[in-house]
Image 1 (cartoon, rainbow, N blue to C red):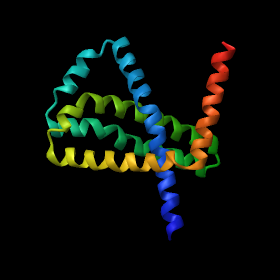
Image 2 (cartoon, rainbow, N blue to C red):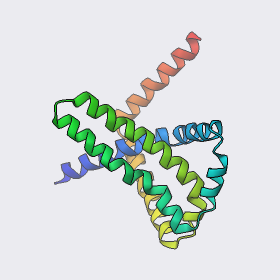
Image 3 (cartoon, rainbow, N blue to C red):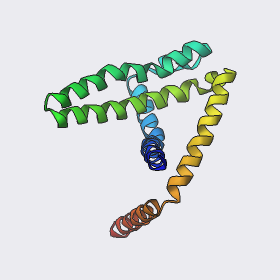
Image 4 (cartoon, rainbow, N blue to C red):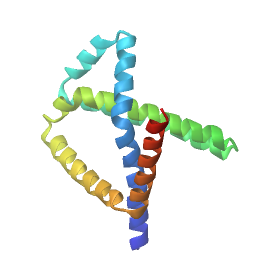
Length: 158
């Protein structure tokens, strides 16, 4: 089933592209919110957590999002598709933002765990290969060219 594998790779690439696009800006947005709420001390405490506690704290938002996503599926099943979809998208965006910020705070500590550092290295290599594959697709190159032209037109218009 090569087509199924290609479909899975394409869907995974879409998720990864979203996270690549949103990871830094969302993380920066959460950092600004933390500063505005005067929660800098909390961030410093999170950055000093022991490795396994940091692991739990970093990935807790992923687990906490599961019941919300199940509620969204329930809404969709009840005929409230737009509300369910909006909830899923909102949880994905907020969850990515929080995960990105927590990971930025805890990454040095997490890399002290040998198994985590190895998995992270493998993940980054796999992700890079997948993104290279997507970037070489004709549809990607076309979309990138169109985006560049639109950006240039907006700059010229300003």
